[in-house]
Image 1 (cartoon, rainbow, N blue to C red):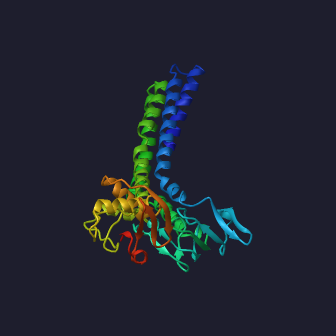
Image 2 (cartoon, rainbow, N blue to C red):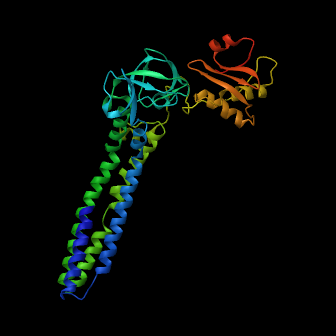
Image 3 (cartoon, rainbow, N blue to C red):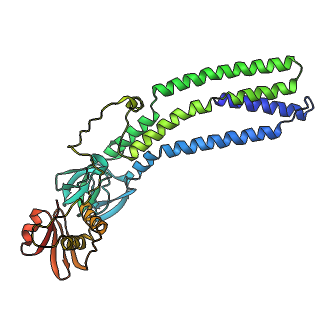
Length: 362
């Protein structure tokens, strides 16, 4: 494709130089500059679209931290991610991302692993549990011993899959490449015949102009660029929505699918919990109960806490004034709401607060 454009520019430039030197009466400097401008604009738009299509890799790379809090004998030091080594112990604060794949050696927290699993429910982590770099610790801090860094992490593996999918070919693209190659030879032959005919006819000036015109019109840019650009965009959109395409042939064959079977524990999730319903098992008003729970969870960064607060706001329930907020890692929260002690969490937490007004999440 670029060969045809190059030939067209050379022909137009040669005609313009010849006209300037007095060999012809045709001057196409303005046409040549316009052609160069249009070609540069087209290639700029092409590169911009391709860069945007590959933005999925940038989005995945953004999940990796630039630095980590490494625990040493003298305290905690902030080190670049590139300086981390296997065996280092790093501190993961509540609400921050895990710096690298590793094993929890101290602390408990719920970790949002929707990046890897797609599940909306956070996974409780305790000493001995494995964590993946890029996931988010909620409701507690962890000390993690690094077991994989750099290209050996799970997130790097996902990035390699996306890059390989975008770089792989497909039958449609191979067919388009062959058609573009055939069209190239046809265009060169047509340009040569055009030049020879008008040159032998005595109109040498227009021979060059018409030859350049044939080469430009016959250039298969749309055929050669549309298919790979569409495939790059489709794989990028899939990666951004959690669908990793390992092979473009698989993506191409997806148009023939009649049935899709999802192995996802019986459900497909958005990767974030949502409050679907609220029910009181005592004589407490449901809206009052939801207001108490939302108030107790308002300062928590836990995904379930955010779901409760968002669900209350969606139902028009406003949280009440709260004080003494306390996050209980792995169990829930506790706070004083309008002078009442309110605990929000699972059965293990609520059994310790019998006699208090409580809300249970599940």
